[in-house]
Length: 338
Image 1 (cartoon, rainbow, N blue to C red):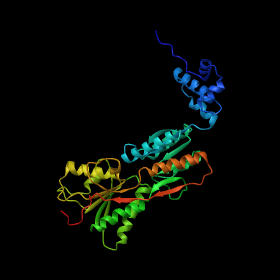
Image 2: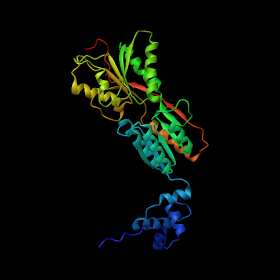
Image 3: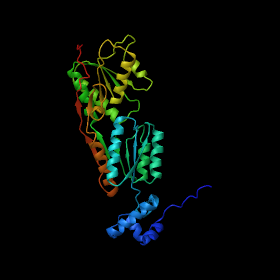
Image 4: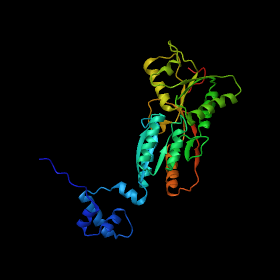
């Protein structure tokens, strides 16, 4: 015989089980202070034993809040994003919020779907690393009036909450490091999906070379998963087309190193640097000079800003830029080094 599905446990069931009123049960389950500790303990024990599940939709109608935060990033498979979202999840949980995560694959149409879903779920706030193909999704989100904070990127001509890095300084630090090594012929491996971070990193990189007042050559190639970018960096007989390479992030640098080891035996060592310093939390099997910032500070500040905006909507917007430093792991070789 088919099993009869039991009805969902209600507040009335707990009230009948404990002898308290439905109002008292509701107050106890919501941790209200007008219920004695003994009564609260009895009600909580009953709720657990009976299998009561909080109706979040009903609770949000009463409080006006769902206690849910959406976190929207380009790709949580990227270790940089994965590490930060884990910190964000823990911070939100400790603050009494639930979180759910969505990937945009750096695609504006998918990003709109993510933002729409977050709005349909009546989230209390959004932490968002935007695609930045245009400002259409930003304008949509602003129209919803949902509190949000941008993380890692920002829109230069729009005033929003954001926590980002000093990406211009990041680019300059890498270029100055290469100049110290006597390197004036470079290839910069950029991301095809341009954003504020990519533009400012490259801008800082080029500005440092221009300021050195010496002739230099730089070519830009754009990363692709098929590896066409890599074939623009090395000849068939294994000669690098530049004295050093700079990758938009450490994941791209990782791809360069992997392809070099798998398919080529270059006549000279690969000289490469990146950004994001994955080594700070991930034991990569190779040395990589990279620009670093606090992986903990960015998610902490983003969560703080968002929760403050949720609790106090009139709080002035926060524009926070975190400092960076170059970590030299000796993956850049001076011109003439063996």
